[in-house]
Amino acid sequence: MPIIVDPDPEVVTGLLAAMPPGSHGVESTERLQAWLATHGDEYVVVLGPTLSTDDVLGTTEALRVSRPIVSTILVRDDITTELLRAAIKAGARDVVASDDAAGAFDAAIQRAQQLYVALRGPSGAMHLSKVISVFSPKGGVGKTTIAVNLALALSDKGARKVCLVDMDLAFGDVAITMQLFPTHSVEQAIGSEDTLDVEMLDVLLTRHPDSLMVLAAPSHPDVRERITPALVSRVIATLRETFDYVVLDMAPSFDEQVLTALDGTDDVVLVATLDVPTLKNVKVAVETLDMLHVAPEHRHLVLNRADDEVGINADKVEGILGMPVVTEIATSIDVAASTNAGNPILFSDPQHQFSAAIRDLTRALAGEQLVPVPAAAPEAGAPEGRGRRSRKRK
Ligand SMILES: Nc1ncnc2c1ncn2[C@@H]1O[C@H](COP(=O)(O)OP(=O)(O)O)[C@@H](O)[C@H]1O
Ligand SMILES: [Mg+2]
Image 1 (cartoon, rainbow, N blue to C red):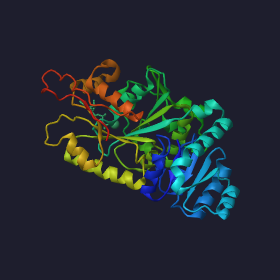
Image 2: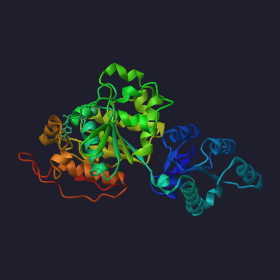
Image 3: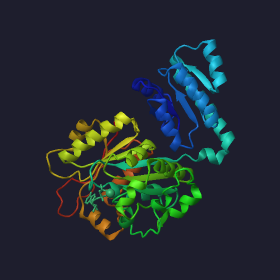
Image 4: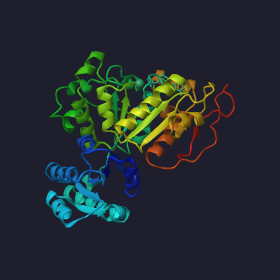
């Protein structure tokens, strides 16, 4: 997906509006390098007008050699002959004027895509993978349950290639939640930061019967410290080469592995519950994601256990966190029971409100607008009208 680099958030927002849906913004050329390290399928980089000319030309020149398949488009306030000459020399694909960016972008990005198709072949160009992190700074809020069911929903019984990665490297429970008994995990990739490839990684994956691949967490907590950030980057970049979706079930912390994984993430699913400590921590997490510029336009807030009668409702949460709630999930004994049985609820009970909420989330990730639906039938004994509610994205 196209990426724009500019330190001014307003400029990024303005230019993103003129770029294809799903495009991303980062604030510096250093962040761009981190992005490219995990996005082998990137085909165009837009360098914004607030960057210095030296920075823009240096980055273009470096990309010309290191990533010749990536086209660079320069957006400048003043286009002089001297600038054009330097841009051509550095290897820029296009230079567009700031006040004409919207008009000129379409054609410039299309040209970049055509070049990419020509260089990689149509199948290479078609393969655009998406990395989705399911994150919350709190444990026990439903991250793993949501990640497992989301990965199954995205896979659509094998129609799309999906890999679920247990990034809770010390206390991961994806395998047990899915009743899998992995013989290998990311542990066997330790030391392969520079050599890991698709074939090597393939051996470490565990297949779930529903056509989903899982990269399990190590079986002992002390292995976590040997999984370097460089290895995390390499694993994600390698999975991108073959999978349509890579779903990361994150640890509830901002440790270096989690931060690295977030850096390579396209979309973040944030999980919150209706208790003040969780909301406080999610707010701090959102501020941290803002500071790190992680997926600014691609965050999806899920409210789990949203029916808890605790004096806070979804509207209040939206106010506190400054973002819309994509979907609300009620507390249900069926969810806990399905976890205990190792049988994901999306398949054991597709009509359940939890399963419907996961499908809402899947649609939100695909960029669809959600329309409110009537509350699902309440569970026996549950008060009236407190089922899942999908919310229109603002
Ligand atoms: N909406 C819900 N209703 C009832 N139980 C839930 C719900 N969401 C999650 N749980 C249960 O809570 C426990 C913790 O969930 P989990 O997904 O492991 O959280 P996390 O990964 O955030 O630590 C699991 O037993 C799970 O079945
Ligand atoms: Mg978990």
